[in-house]
Image (tube, rainbow, N blue to C red):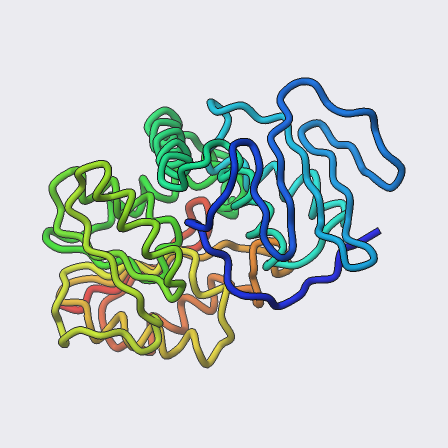
Length: 307
């Protein structure tokens, strides 16, 4: 039993909703609290979700039992482990809609629901950012897995300004900007960038946000001290990845920091399209002609000093 992925309009994190329910053209997500309805025919029950895959033109329906204190980025891991890992649902686009629906089902005010999500996630990062899952961890799935990735990236920053390419929700740029750094967060998804900008303003954080393809990034040569490319390159093909690296090197005044998961197979649920090895990182570093370091810590790292 699977749901076929479709290609509707992009996910709008600010679309209208009612209390306890999110709905778009593909999914309907409801917060049902601890009292679940009687299990209906064709519905799959997991510890946190009841899911009825689409049939006959109907939406995928997902009910969840999560409370406000549980709405953080670990929801992505729960959705992946309980719904997409077993194959009840399939597709990156559908994953994003279910995840968005869970967050948005918490409050009819879009910004209030997302501020809850960001606040819980940032607080959890503060609690477990030094946690250490196994060496070579993916940095995806749970906050505890990527907290040490963020912590290590912070240790690798050169003094001065920072640009993160492909920032997604932008938790690390928010942290860095709140700490006094001059930070720009960019991503190719306009909805995600708008969301991050609105949350930053709501929280009083002076973060610059920018919609940009990392392979064709605006900005002058050497215009930022450190360029971060964290868990981005596994989402694009080799040619696109090389253009991203070239842009990072062009923009960086002092340092480029690249991080990738070390996977045996590309993880489809997270939108990965290829695997990258330490040997790949070494080859990329050598090709720059600059001093560089490749190492492994909760994934693979390439650090290039361009100054």
